[in-house]
Figure 1 (tube, helix red, strand yellow):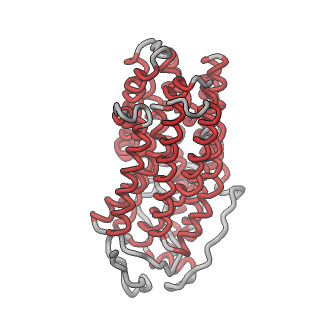
Figure 2 (tube, rainbow, N blue to C red):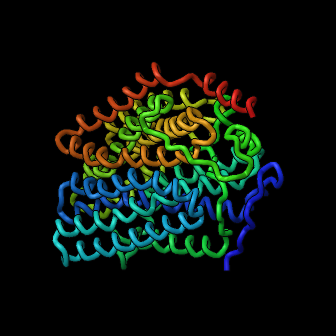
Figure 3 (cartoon, rainbow, N blue to C red):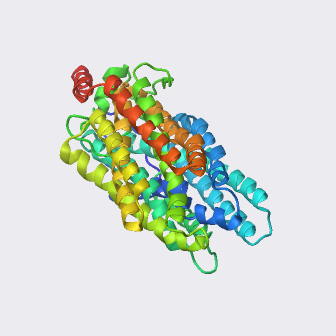
Length: 460
């Protein structure tokens, strides 16, 4: 039976103890597995679509309903986690992930065996996939809120950066691992069942090892996607400062309703939507591009290896950006966003011109390096743009923005690529350039964001 933590006392009476390494590792795995489930199929779905004999664009469209549900449901789950308990919402997210992956795998097994028509296979696949968008979106905001409400002030930034980076790691490493899970018995559907089993193991560990919680105050953890330098948000205010700012002393505070149209957020959300669409379109195209450029359409099963290799290079580049370049170069949100978009343009142009696997992997790595700089910049900038009390809401909004990119962009990118590959790549570069140009004019300077953070600390 899971141990139950006592109800937390006001911060000025009983400071919270740090989360143990075991529990932090468990929270890391919740984020990693759910994120990997959202993108693990990237390396096998192009081959599956070719085996089914359907147009590439229909494979991308099958993701649309799930992505739309993610956009709608993520803020709802973020609010509920503040009131119903964070552990419960993590469990909801994991259950949605497990059931979705298992059903998707079963549907594709029947489709590839010829028991279902290609059209019926995609319809049932989209329905099963929607369970991830509707329920899987409960986990990330709950994990962030759990860590933020239970981590001492001195350790909160490091803990939040670790947890947020796990989600980014999952979105890039999931599809890179998927080709290794193509077993003789299950064939191309092996990754679906393998990730469902891993998710089930994490769910059991969550139930047994993570304490239950009955929060008495709103989640107040910053939404941070990667460790930032001192001029961007390395230091967070303690709980005492939260109480001073909100006028609360340990009692439940009203959770503000934060609008997408908020003037403080608008530049960052525009950057997040445009850049997210560029990244989603890139991920949507890359698998089909590799099959075409390497001449593997005739034997699509052979494409899983090269696709996995290219995506693994992208994963390493993303980790280099988030865990190396950002802290080493002391990049703030604005600088990280702008430099990221510039590198993404160079990378997309590079792999679009490539003629062999090595060149494709190198170009995609450069593009992933750019996206790895951009996404933490946008996430941290949005977090710093609002007050401490609004951090729980901004977590849901950021999750929705990230999901919104996958509603239209992958299918649109593949559709444009299907008409002519240069049109698809040009559209991606145009989106990246739009983020750079608009961000140069509208995103607040890193010094201004740091000054705002320092001012709030002084008030506390």
